[in-house]
Amino acid sequence: MLRLAIQKSGRLSEDSLNLIRECGISFVNSSLKLKTECTNFPLEILFLRDDDIPGYVADGVADIGIVGENVLVEEGKQELTVEKLGFSKCRLSLAVPKSMAYSSIQDLNGKNIATSYPNLLQAYLQEQGVQANIHTISGSVEIAPSIGLAEAICDIVSSGSTLISNGLKEVERVFKSEAALIATKDLSQEKQEILEKLLFRIHAVQRARK
Ligand code: PRT
Ligand code: ZN
Image (tube, rainbow, N blue to C red; front, top):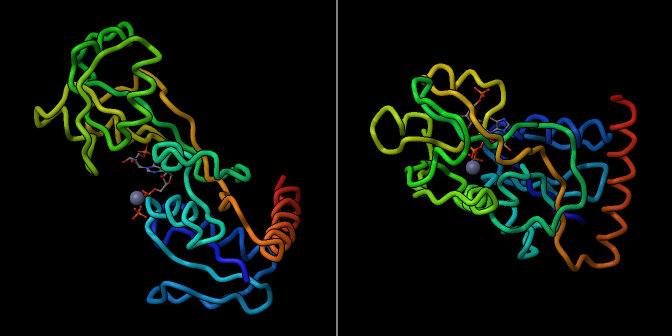
């Protein structure tokens, strides 16, 4: 039996479950259960916080997982990637107040930037030769400029409407992300074979969707 970790409730959950269902795999999904065994495929599903998924897979508590590349790379676990899945597409972007005169990334030198992605941001700033103060906060990043916590933010954007409604403008794209399938490094032969069967079905689903 292969153990798959997916997000319990959030932006990845529905598409992750739909992918498994479209693979012809059946399971009973109750919102109270943290774990379910599939009835017609040797797969057990664990429902977790997305941030915990790379760690569980790295430690082998779960064999495989579905998580956003933003979380995966932030946690330094990109080597677990098996393949990209094409959903939950978004970007990690830098944004500043609409009223701020902004001509280039150099304008952020010496500024305070609020983010939940300090590692991705630090790597980007370093690559651009910018020195800024990174303030790590775990949520509601978009309000940081209006409450005086930071002059800029670095957060996930998809439609851009959250930025606009908080009086912010997107000025740099730091990282492009989508959901990825990840796997632990040393799967047993038996589990590797189940993973290959699952991948075969995932590829068929992806071809049918095109
Ligand atoms: O509870 P748990 O820790 O599991 O969930 P979470 O709240 O940390 O994550 P969740 O469910 O918000 O997002 C899970 C993953 O979905 C992220 O890690 C991304 O890979 C992906 N994703 C895709 C997004 C978005 N789109 C997105 N729009 N994650 C977050 N957002 C947020 C963003 O933070 C911002 O507040 O939506 C807002 C912006 O959306 P727009 O459309 O207004 O630009
Ligand atoms: Zn999370």
